[in-house]
Every structure is written in structure tokens, then in C-alpha cells.
Amino acid sequence: MILILAPDTDRESPQYHEMLDHLSRLPGVTARVHQVQGREQTLTEIYLLGNTAALDESEMVALPCVERVVRVSADYRILGRHKDDNRAAHFAYNGVDFSQDNLHVFAGLCAVDTPEHVDQTMRAVAEAGLSCTRMGAYKPRTNPYAFQGHGKSCLPWVFESAGRHGIKVIAMEVTHDGHLEEIHDALEAAGRPTGVMLQIGTRNTQNFELLKHVGRQTDFPVLLKRGFGITLEESLNAAEYLASEGNSRVIFCLRGMKTHLGDPHRNFVDFTHIPVVKRLTRMPVCIDPSHSVGSRVASPDGIMDMMHATAQGVVAGANMILLDVHPAPQKALVDGPQALRLEELPWFLEDVRLAREAYERRRDLAQRFLAEQNRQ
Image 1 (cartoon, helix red, strand yellow):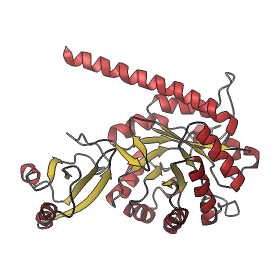
Image 2 (tube, one colour):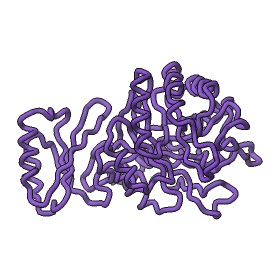
Image 3 (tube, one colour):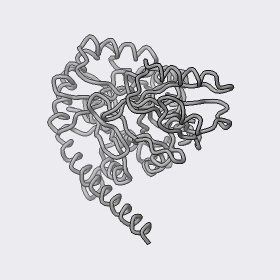
Image 4 (cartoon, one colour):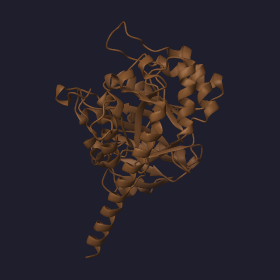
């Protein structure tokens, strides 16, 4: 059961503490407090875990500060969609709004290599009208001798460059809990010129201790990639691990499945699951065409496979795109063959705009049709 409190409830007020005191006396029930930063208000939600079937909804809604009650009807208690649940599917971070209704492109370096390449990329991203990027400081690699990323040593110049070019959010993968402290300290030392979205990579989707640790912090939102060898349900439960620990600002990323059936692409593109994730949960959905396709090859029409896959995801309603770009892909230390050149970014974004327009027209058509059916 979820108790939705009145907007901007004062957590120091006597009414709030009276409500918590009542909940603490419920037998077999544990209460967890979650705060959700919306576009204009801070919302507080209380998640009641345990023997909630015996609770009377009318008694719960009569408690001080409680505005309404949602009885959980699915496995994904916090992130899922439940019966009569009209909670908004969005959150705001560092001036950027993430929802199931809009679209953001995070174009950047899969792996940070040199300060010059970072600055060239940040400049190109900003000139293309984007406010978000991706920058890999920590890189888990299959080969133990491959480049593992510069780690914390590159964070100062990455954050400084982002601030200089007006980049508001950087998606950055973390592979163990110590990285969170390094990112936090580097941001503070730089004066917080930008924001960071922590990324949980496909290899760590079932690293439950890392999920718990990342979920306990609420400074940074989280981008969780689907595990490339597990079911969609298992990956959605990984997202629920994050939310159950306190951080419900989660974006779910589809990045392709690891199977030879996807050959010659790097992975089997799974973007048809976009509407499924949006139907089952309130999370915005990201696509990663770079790691799904894995190359810059083009079909006879001149359009790269990566762009075709991106358009398919955007037409299906994707809310975020994670894209590899690089000033000199042939010199990239990680995944150079799949990175777009900086001069190709405007072309890519115009193609995305066309696909998004197609999605919005399809959505509007569906809503008109359903409204007409309801009138009959």
C-alpha cells in the first residue's frame, strides 16, 4: 500500500509525526518514506510493506497529511503502475525534466580519453542544442588488459568542461560503491557546475549490493541498463531494488540482448519492449542504439543501421537516447567502431526529430480514436 501525502508536506510538523507514529504501531507493517521531486512540488510517499491486506483504506486516508491511498496490485510496488494509480511518471533533476512524455538525447564519449576530446565533444553537444551527455570515467571490460577508464582522475576536467559549455546532466557508469563518493567529492570540489546521472551497466544489473547502495543515495538519479542475458522481468526487479532503498528517480535502458540471433549486429535490438516497460512501470525508457547495433554500417539507402534502430525506438515512444559520439572514432580507446563522428550529430538529431514527430502523430491519432469510441 502507498500513502500519497499532500504536496509539500512539512516533515517537521506535528501532524506528520503523528501519522508516522500511528504507522509504527501497525502490526506486521513497515513504513518507508520516499520523497519525489516533481516539476513544481516535492511529494512525499509512504510505502507500507508487510501485512497490508488487512489495512482499511478509509482509515489510512483519514490519517494526518495523507491525501490519497494506492493499493499495490503488481510486483513492482514502487515503480509499477497500479489500479487507480494516477501518480505522475516524471521527475526533475538539475533543471531537466525526465518523463514518459518527452525525449532527451545523451550524446557523448563511451570512455573519456583526453581533455581535448572531452572539450570538443561537450562543445559539439552544446552547439547541437543538447543539454545532456554521456562520459565514461569507469569502464568495466571483458578483457582484464583492456582500458578500464581514467577513473576519478578525469572527473575534475570533465565537470569543468561541462560547466563551461552549459551541460546540465552527465550519464556516468559506476561499478562499485566507492565511485559514488569519488563523483560526489569531485562535483563538490568543482562547485557543482553540472549534474550526474549514475549508470548501472548491463553486467551489474544483478549486482544486488551495488543496487542497494546506489538506491540509498538520493543525490543522483539512476539509469539502469537491462541485463543482456536475463529476462525483462528480472531487469525490472533490479530497478525496483533501487527504488525500494529510497531512490525512485530511475530510468530504464534497453541496450540489446546478448545472442548470436542478432548477428551481424553486436546485440539483438530489443526496442519493441519500450511500450511494455511504459505500461508496466512509471519509469521513462531509454534506448542505447550504439551498444545494440555496435557499428556505423549503412544500408543501401545511406542510413546507418544504428539510425534505423534509433528511429524504431523513438517511433515506439522512447524517452531518452544514449549515443556514442567521438571527435576521432579511429582513436577512441573504447568502442570506436560504433561512435558517430561529431559532424554526423546534427544529421542524427534531425532524423530523431522526424521519428519523434511520427510518434507524436501516432499517439494523437490513438487518443482521438479512443475518445471517439468512448463517446459512442
